[in-house]
Image 1 (tube, rainbow, N blue to C red):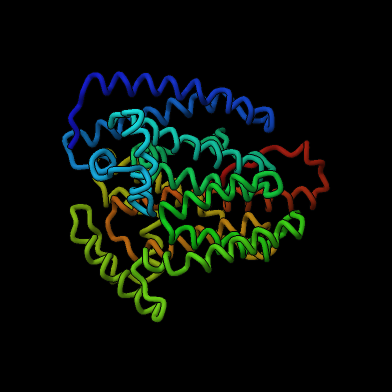
Image 2 (image 1 turned 120 degrees about the vertical axis):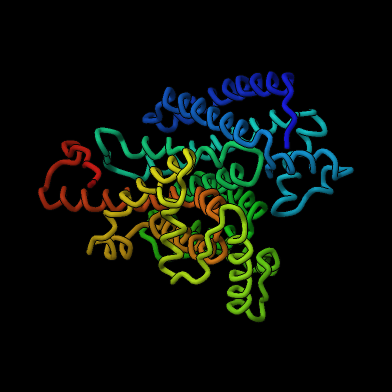
Length: 406
């Protein structure tokens, strides 16, 4: 539970302004590389994300929150910075330590700082999608890429002190780096390092996805760079394999059996919580559907639940174009990015849907992978539009944006 102070709120507001003006020159540099980047849109996104940081802060006032625990542990539990260094929860303490103990950031300021990290996750994902989608795809006259940038649930869970904001940044950075591997190796490595330190099992899935994508994908990347990334990812996975299994509570001698046992136990424990949903007896496909598309209106009658249900309904409609006989050919002939995105989306989904039965955690955990689904759908729309163009032999510049099929 937090104790609200006027000085803390004022300091947080000042930091919001400072970080806004710090962001502007960085955005202008991105604009130089990507002329299509709309600076005004990115400014609006900043204040939109800040609004959700405020909403999150108000929501947890007077209630228990992981963000409060992160702050208090960072402030009280360590005698030195590197004493906090480790993966998972302690890594959040490690990142927070210098700000809390050297620069004396209060709780509200730390919330703003981590929300800023989440904001940059949106920037990197936006650039990744925009630079790899050829056509403009619209719904009700609105550009889909812009629309998905403002989905409320994505902002709510990436706007606070905790794992959600920083892993979202890490995944986005790694994806941004992979998008233009020749020029962005540093972004790829930094993103993977962040992901490993926050959630080692997600790092494993991401690394496998990168390896499979590079090996099987159709991407114009120099062979030596493919080999370099392949070798680096493979070595990292091998070196960190035992650590990752230990984090997940798995036994390397009986991987499948220990996974089933751990999954069943976690699902059972979580189903007993206030927002529990016992899916342990669900068929596997229904578990996946629950992870991707619930809660829906019948699950969550509250106002926040209705907002999430609207967003999940949008995801359902977004997925409909994939039920097409051309989709298999699209995937088999797709780029490294399409294949890597599919592996990340399915791999994380399979792992998570087997262990999560708490609706709150399901809503929170899927934020880091739903943009991969968005990218796959938009890429498939591109694929169909390009086939149409080739059939009609029309110049690309004369092709209008296609409408979202709802």
